[in-house]
Every structure is written in structure tokens, then in C-alpha cells.
Length: 518
Image (cartoon, rainbow, N blue to C red; front, side, top):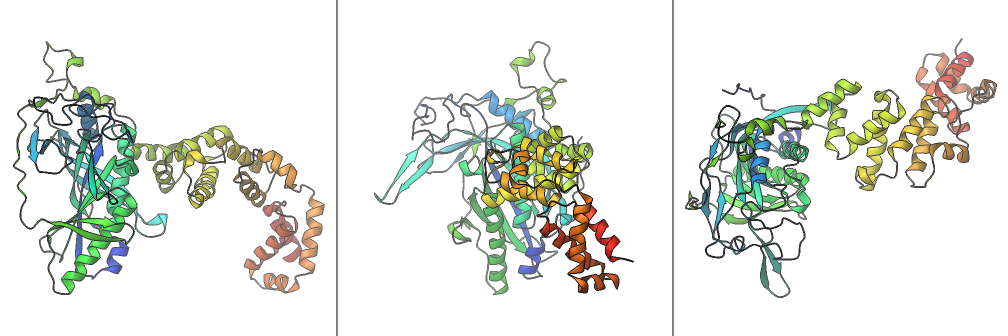
């Protein structure tokens, strides 16, 4: 039996509390569809290829030609098992496939093969952290229960031609393997839900069970949102469909919470409906109502037998492990997950947990940081600020990914080494970094020589500059001598300005103190 996991006391987003009426509580649950990283589709050998020409990767089965039968893809099953294990789920050794009937033009069979009665994995939990306010000190750890992970096939895609007033159907996506991950309504606001999705995305990418690229539709989210008075049953929910961005997910949920709260405050009622998020307007818009329960006419899939999995204890003696899907072998292949990586980074490098969170969450940043540490052999706590504040800050300003950084790890490592050896001052190092960001193929040492940014090592030269500053700023000197030591920073800044940042700030402060303080 799995140990019971205590869920933390609900923590509500400060923004949601401030911007909505206090008597209301919001509830959010998610249904996430992750496209499985597989060379072929779930029930056919058709190739999975993003942006392929329309209808170029479609088998007879995908097009639902009569007489064609499904053949399950082993890779997709293993991916679902691995994902379930990573999410602390119980893996069902026997799971079933069902037909879910509904009519859309991009669903040629008129039904979807899914797992409604007995999915492949159930009863998991996902732990994630998110930022409550504007400071990293306000990071909150929460858990969301995973109801189930189920295998199902994707539908095709409708292409709307507004000019010709027609809709075309592309079946390339039809039959691609999906994992539907259902999260219980344990979340309370948009930012919290977005953080859970980001954490799930990192896990899927670490497992390589899904590329989870939301911009390519490999991770799509449906959000169920309702509001209610504290202590009362959950209210009528609305579903916002097919959100393909964590940022838009947060905005859609928060808008929907405000919309429902306003309706209830005005004495109205919430409709049980499906809505879409208009990211340009920042609002949700109605798609169809769900007041009348839709009958999907679920039935067992007659062409697929029960999916049977094994572990070391249940594996029959006459079967080879290669002939079956072995849960224990998949568990042994689990890679280091994001939460474990963060803990390792904190322990190994002595950095803050908040910093490790940023390193892991930004694609490629952890590898960049560890490369700089390895090349420079400088205290990692001195490096982390350069990587997170300076490098990442610049890349975000330019809207660039880590992989497109013009400042290579070796260049940053060289710059940090020169700073550590006191070849340059900290302010001069910032100037060198800005020069590196311009993309010129020069080393930090070359920039220092060209710009004459090397540290002034002649103490007598610095003393003379300090003496001139002291002599020309008598009011500041008097203020310092009367106890206002903060004014000393102004004098240090003036010295640094005179030397163009080439003086050691520690030495400058020491000399100024000798000259100003009795």
C-alpha cells in the first residue's frame, strides 16, 4: 500500500485575494494532453512529424478505412508507465481501452480510443513551487493530486480558410499517442496552475516521454474553474479549452475567476459551459454550453484486448522480460527528476533553493552554470549572480533563449577569473560583460586591454585621487564625520567615476576612511 501523503494547507495567490471579492474561494482543476515522444502513432505505423505537408503521414487506420485494425505501440505504453511512476502514481497491471463517441469532422471514425473505465495509472501527486509575490523569498511549495494518467489517440486538425469560406481537414495528427493527465481541483488561481504545468513540462522533458513544446501543440491544457463560498460545495464550473501557453493559462484562469465572481456578486448564475481564451483581448469567450449532459456512449474497444503489464514478482517464468512491459525495469530507468536536481544543486554548490529553481526551470541554464563553475573553479556562490542576474537578465531583455547567448560559458568563466585575480574591479567587469553582449568576437582580456579597464595597482595614484575628492567635497566629509556614514558611498562612487571603475572599491573605501574619519 502506498503511504499517505498529506496535502499542505491551501495557500491563495495574493493577486487573486486582492482582486476578487473576499467571500469567494476559487477552485481550479486541469486536464493536460501531452503528445507522446514516439516515432510512430499510437495504433498505426504512420510517422509522427511536426509541420509535415497536410495528410502526408496518414495510414489506412488513421483515415478509418473499413476493416483496418489497431496495433498498440509499445513505446507509447512505456512512456505512459514511466510518466505515471515519475508522478508517484499506482500503475495498473491491467488497463482497458474504450471508445468515446462524438462527431467532429477531424475524427473520421466517429469515436476516440481512450481509457475511461480503467486507465494505465492512478492516484499520483505532483509537488511544485510558485512565487506568491515579487520576491523569491515568497516561494510556496504545494501539491496537486493526479487522478489518473490515460492513453488515448489524438484527433486530426481543422484548417479554416476564411477567404474561400471553407474548412479543410488535415489528418496528420489523427492517431498520435497522447497521455491525458488529470489533476484534481486542488489549485486556487492562475499562477498556481501555471506553475504546476511548468513543473509537469520539466518532468516530461526529463523523462523524454514528451517534448512538451506548447507552441507546437505537444502540451495542451483544459482548465476547469469554479468559485464558491468558504465551507460550501463547489460552484458550477466552466471549462476553458485548449490553452497552449503557461502564461495564457494563468491569465485565462484569473480572468474566469473574476468573471464568475462578478456574475455571482450581481445576483446572476454561472452556466456550465465550455469557453475559449482570446489571448489578444485577454478574455474567455463562450464556445458551447454543457447544461445538457453529453452522452459519449462509452463502450469497450472490441479490437483491443486488456493491456497487461508485469513487475518482477508477477512475470511468468516462461516469459522473457523483453516480451512484456516490465514496470520494475522502467522504474530503474527513471532519470534524475527536476526536484532531485534542484536539491543536488543546493547541496553541491551551496546556492539558494530559489536559484536552483531558476537554473532548472530555464532550458539550458543549469548546463551553462555548471560549465562556468567547471571552467573557472571559482566559488559557485560568486558565479550564480552573474548567471541569473546578468546573463539571464540580458537574455530575457533581448527575448533570447540560453542556447543563443552571445556570451559563451568560457568567456564568462574567463571574466570571473580575471575579477577573482583582481585584474579588474567589479564595476569594470560589468563593462566588459556589456561589451561581450555586443557579440564581438573578443575575449575579456582583449576588451580590458582595448578599453584600458585594468585595475589601478599603484596605491599612491589612488591616494592622490581620493585626496582631491575629499578636498573638493567638504560638506560630504563633514556629514560623514558627524556620523552619516552612508555619504561615504557617494565619495567612493566619485572615485570610481574618476578612475572609470578601475580602482578596487575595497581599497578606495579604506583610503577614504583614513583621510575622512579621525
